[in-house]
Length: 393
Image (cartoon, rainbow, N blue to C red):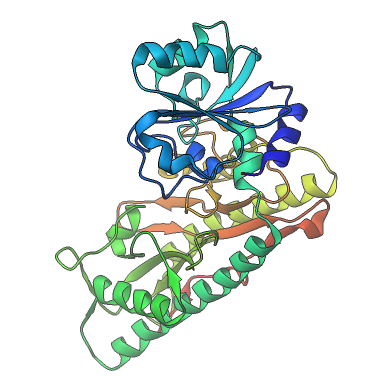
């Protein structure tokens, strides 16, 4: 565990301790911080990381083999009465602890500890605070190796995107019959060749299917791609190292020579909304002024609404990106949730506005890495970005 880093953040946030808790995998944040993500643990475990001193663990007597090499003191329990006494003792020297919960469930990614456990901890006179900011600082900031790896993955993902659109064009010019599923499998083949992995097959969506943001074809649910079709591809992947960070991008294309005006109009609105977010972040970053996730969403959503399409932008503007595709840092969101966390140096996130009409949907997605203060610290890692609908024929 990053004990020194965690304790520095606890002091900065005026918290006495971080109380990590998990039961059968309900809290991946606690698992990751404790270095237990791969362990098979069937009983409740706790780890109190104080602002000063060594961590203190409380684990079930049948699970001791999973905690042989952990840092700090390990205490054991078996029965629930023994557990109750042990928790009281564990918390005796602290008054305020962070746990994985979010007031009013505002940030579901942080809401991992069940209500009953929170009630139980609070019954000992403990003030439980959300770990949302603490988790972002400890879990979401990329180290140098991760930042470099993410940028390499971004380059490779863009190459896979280029290959997919070029393949579609060549197949159509040759008069061959292809489907969304065929394109998806071609992309996965590129990922294999590049030694990339993903947690879900990419989205390849034609015409009205592109209006479903989470549609993905399968061998039994797919459409033929024909000349004159509108095509959206959303793909994400990372290197095979468990600590590697994902890259994620979305592009759109037209299977013809001259892109119809209706596609151009909607794409231009979405593109400008995307770019307005980048400009806002760059301006705030250059001025060393804070910017919160919900503010970026407001900027993007405000522009799309001004153009008359606000009701067709049905998801948040962007999500944190880490070793999992949806990470634990601040999201660009004031729709699905209100994420009031500030964007901080070291985090990576997507910017992906969309307009989803009945006949087609447009989304354009880039990744941004905040590397440090100043305008140059705002890196669009999935560059070059898309500035017009691709013409494939």
